[in-house]
Image (cartoon, rainbow, N blue to C red; front, side):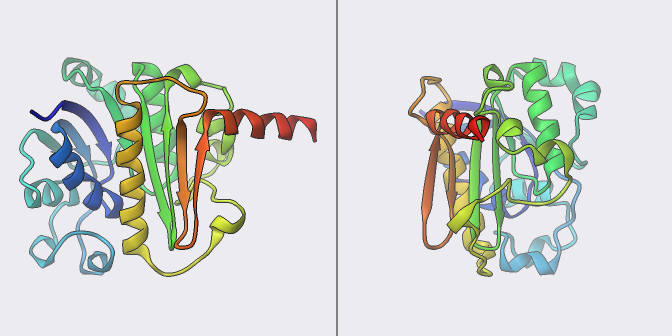
Length: 233
């Protein structure tokens, strides 16, 4: 029997279109999927939809295409006001984690804020061109080096798109958006499996980054070492 997973998913675009089918095969899913966007023909080259869903809401299309009945489509954009509007529903649904695959920093900030308020882990995925990235955050990490708002301070001040901040050789730029979506979804699935029932560290991965040529794993210990190096400068 598949284990249950009760989730809030923010974003029903490219990464979600590869992520949701895999999660649905791994877990018995329930919860809510937020997205106000409409599926367009230009999405077909990098998102796992087809022509039947052009003109339909992405959340509804993604759930219908994958025959997922226990996740409710919420045809609006997620922000921290969603917690105020729906907090009782979220608590009653016994949500276990938040997944943010929206491609902007504001949605990620709001997801982290709600994770802190509800004491829920947050899983973030991002990609741009050939770079892919996934990150896990636990509320007990607030203000620690592994808090993405500490590691990537631009999260607090910018409203730009993906990724969070791929560094050094991980900034290759090749137009492989469909591949980048698939890799980001794979990274996120692995992080969810790693952290769903076990919060031990410091040598467990909290982040994966990749391009078509390289993959980097970042652990809690790596984040601590990075912060120490910055403080010595």
